[in-house]
Image (cartoon, rainbow, N blue to C red; front, side, top):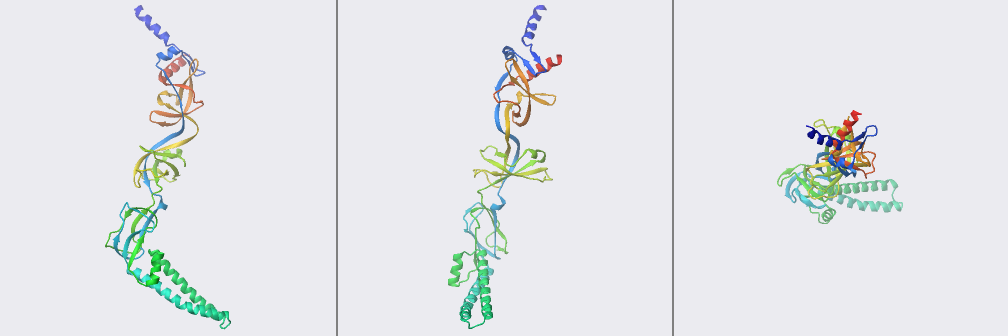
Length: 366
C-alpha cells in the first residue's frame, strides 16, 4: 500500500501551483506548463468584425431601369430584340403600324405650311411698320399671329420626336412630305433588355409597356437583416459575397420593420462589375464592421468564462496573468476581442480550462 501511494504523492507535488487571487496571477514553472498541456500563441490584430450572415437579392438601381412604351396605339409589326440582348441608345427595338402616327405627321406638315404662308405677311407688315406706313397695333397683331404658328409647328415637331422620330427622319419628312404609318420605338439608353412584354402581331394601346431596359453598370444588394441585429450595422460597412472575391459597401440602413418577417432592409452598392452576379439572383452575404479601435482575433479555446465575464491567460515571467476581455464578435472557431493589450502577448490557446481549474480551486481554498 505504501509503495502505491508514493508515486501519487510525487505526481501531486509536480502539478502544485501557487496562485495569487488578488492579482489574478498563476505562478507556474515551464515544467508544470508542459505537463498541463498548455500551448501558447500570439494574438492577431484585426481591423474588421464579422457582424452577421444573411441572404441578399441582387437588384438594379431604380434610376437605371427604364420602360419602353408605345407612344401611340397600333399593331406591332416587328420586334428586333429579345430578353437579354444588349442594345445601344437610339437602337430601334420594335416597329408599330399606327394610324395616329400618320395624323401627327399630317398635323406637323399643316403647321409648317401655315407658318410659311404667314411668314410673307409677317415680313411685309414688319417692313411697312418700320417705314411708318401701318400702325403699330397692326404690326403687333401680325407678329402675334406668326409667333403662334411658330409655337404650333414646334409643338408638332416635339410630338414627333417624343413618338420616336429622329431629327433626320423629320428633316426627310420636310423634304418629301411622304407620310408613314410605321413607328419606330428607340432604346432610351444603352443597356440590356431585361424583359420583353409584347408579341408581334398584337394591338397595343398608347403607353402600353413593351420592354424593360436597364443599365447594368451598377448593381445593388438588398439584405433583410433581423431587426434585433440592425443596431450594429452602419453606412460604410463592408459586405462580402460568399465564395467570391466580390464585395459591396452599405449605403442605406432602413428605418421600418417588415411585419411579415420582422426584418429591416439594408442596401449595399456592389463594387465594380463582377462576373457571375446578375439581377434577381439570391446570394449569401456577410456584413463586416470596420473597427476604429484596436481589436484582436483569438481561438475560442483561449477564453475562460467566470461569473458572466470573459478572461484570457497571458504568459509572463512567473506563469500567467488572468486578463479580462470584451468579446465584440465571433467568426467560426475564433472570437474578436478588445482589451488593454499591445498585440505582442503570448496567450494560452490550449489548456485554458486547466488553468481556470487551478485558479478557481486554489483561489477558493485561500
